[in-house]
Image 1 (cartoon, rainbow, N blue to C red):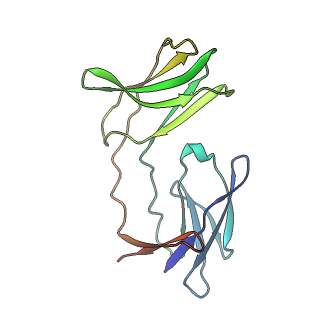
Image 2 (cartoon, rainbow, N blue to C red; image 1 turned 60 degrees about the vertical axis):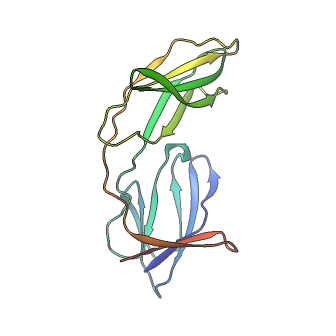
Amino acid sequence: MSVTIQEPVHVGQGAWLIRYSSNLEDPTFRVYVHGRLIKITKLQSVFVYADHADGRLVEIRDDELPATTAAENRISLRWEAVDDVDYYRLDEYVGSAWVEFARVPAGSSKNYRYSAPPSCGGVTQQMRVVPIGKNGNAGTPTSLTPRSLNHPPPPAVSWSFDAQTNTVTITDAA
């Protein structure tokens, strides 16, 4: 029981083609997105409609076990654009001070999104988005208070990479 997933191919706005195979003779595949079963199929490819920036998790199994990626351990920050901005500085409140952890260049988008791992599970984090103007001055920060949760540890797996085909094969180590 081993599924090999090839590198996803972006085929359109929010659409990805995912090809895969199994070492079983006549497998039935179960396709999960964010831990939710979206398809049961004999086909060895599937289209997934997901915003790549959203950090969606796709899992394809050739057995009847539930998905192992039932929850994603990430924080998604979203904010609206501000005029005359060079970039957005993302800060987290650590101890008693704001600490920069990322910069997002300004573009033509009206809305922005950044996916970040939480500092540690089960804690409340304070974050803010600070627009930095083309003149170098900081604008009015937008405060955000995301909450991250603990998730179970990942399953024991072994994996191998085939450099010729650019594929990773993940096998249950149990």
